[in-house]
Length: 180
Ligand code: G3D
Ligand code: MG
Image (cartoon, rainbow, N blue to C red; front, side, top):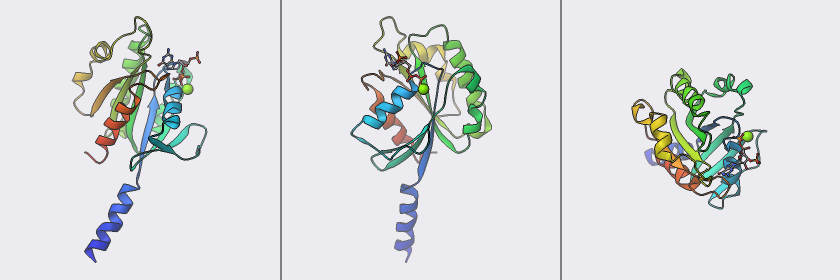
């Protein structure tokens, strides 16, 4: 009897969806990254649920990914997507030095939001193929990531065009599932 209950509970939890929001300034590479996830063989997907939501399976972990527009006019409505979010994927354009300050502002605004207090943050330092881009270490320092104590975070360099680095990011996310 206990075994059956345990099995049912296990089933319930392993099928649970984990909500992910993909944020970042416009042109950072959010849609390209999501598209790469969908094309990747190790990631199984279901048909598109909505215009900006995709369902992604990595091994047995089930993610619902929300691609949120990054234009200035849309940024003020990011918070309408926050409830129940377990992961934030923050995409940074590593060549865009001018706007990194805006990204930093948006990052700390999100981390202070009540609905995101339990969310883990994966930062993709994207466009690593571009000459003269900032390294993940430089971005980490600029964003003062080491000062973030109340949220798990991880920075991963990547190139969304080739898909390089994206799997490592997803792996970090799956390793965080169920950890509190
Ligand atoms: P967004 O959804 O965050 O707004 P997109 O960004 O995914 O639409 O990408 C914006 C532009 O950046 C696209 O170029 C896209 O091809 C490019 N891009 C995304 N990732 C990379 C990368 O890793 N390296 C390089 N060099 N370019 C990248 P276009 O020209 O289609 O606007
Ligand atoms: Mg987009």
